[in-house]
Image 1: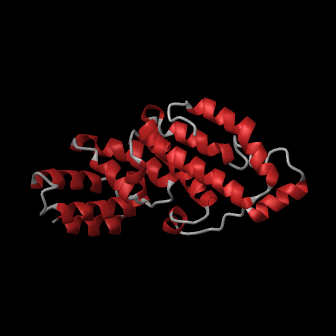
Image 2: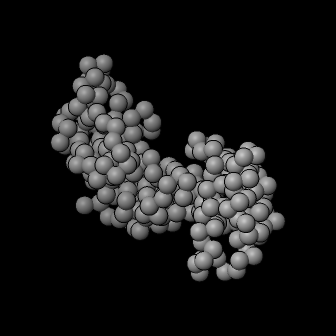
Image 3: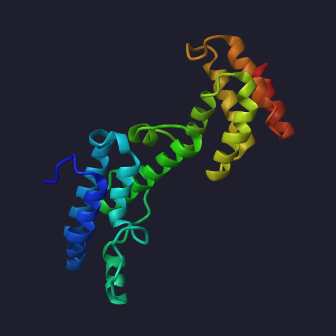
Length: 227
C-alpha cells in the first residue's frame, strides 16, 4: 500500500517507471482495468488526502494512463500492439451518468480526468471553485447561473456578462441571449422565495441583464416576464 502522504510527483514517477510499463506489457485488460481502478480511487481521494494541491494533483495522477498525453498508455508500442490495445481498451460513448457508474474503470478514469480538467478551468478562468461532487451535480447552464448569482452589485452585471458569461457561453456552445433570458426567468421564479432578499434586488439585476440581450423579440418577451 502506498501511503497517502506520498506526493503526486513521486507517485507518478513510481507508476511510470515501475508499474505502468509492466502492466501494459501484459496486454491483460483485467489487470489494466485494476490499475485504472486503483488510480481512479487514489485520484478521487486526493480531494481529501492532499487537498492543498487538488484538483491539479489528481489530474496529474489520472494522466498516467492518458492516451496521447503525458501518460504511457500508447507510448513505445508497435502498430500491432497499438491496434490490440485500441480494440481491447476501447471506451464506448455513453451518457454522463452511465460513464460515472460504468463497470469499466478506464471509462470512469477518463470521466474523472475530464471532470478535473473542467474544474481546474472553472477555477482558473472564472474564479469559481467547485468540489467534484458539486461539479457533477451541475450542468453547463446551471454553472452559468452560478456565475451570474455571484454578481451582487447591479453596476457590475454588464461587465460580468461581457468578461465572464460571454466567454463561458462561447466555450460551452450556449447562446448568450437564450441563457440570459432563461436566467431572468429563473430570477422571476425565485422572487417569492427566501433566496431573493428583496424584490428590488432581483428587479434591478433583471433590468440590467435585459440590456445585454441583443435579440429584440427575446428582449421584449423577457421584459414581459419582469413586469
